[in-house]
Length: 153
Figure 1: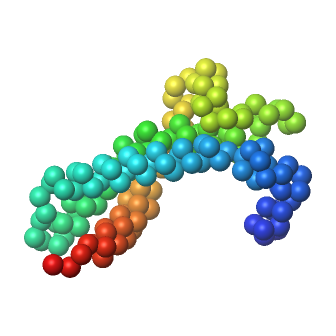
Figure 2: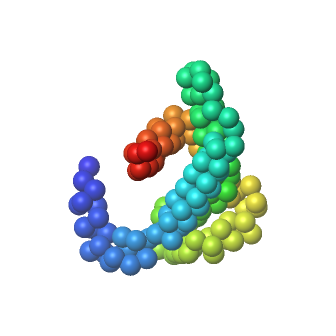
């Protein structure tokens, strides 16, 4: 199987660097990541500061894990339409040779119009199921980096 660099070179050669080439689905991908991170970390750190810290390390772990799980669930619910749009834009088109899905918001509107509201939420359950093991390490890392950035008193 060809490497990522070989694949990228082939895409650039046939379709260029633009939004129909290597950067196909870029706005949907940026929306997907931007919306998720904004909601996830915004909710996580605000709720974490409201709920009291527990002295028992096991209960503190569960507190942070629970906040992360709720944060990730809310972020996923808000962000999954961008994920669906990204997959439609970057994946195979329904009719070979004809581009049906071009832009992020137009793709969301097309999916909603043709398949209904719930089609924008395809894949939500598996995404939420991987939140715990997938996002908890990032929260711990960012919390640690945040603590390192604080001035010592």
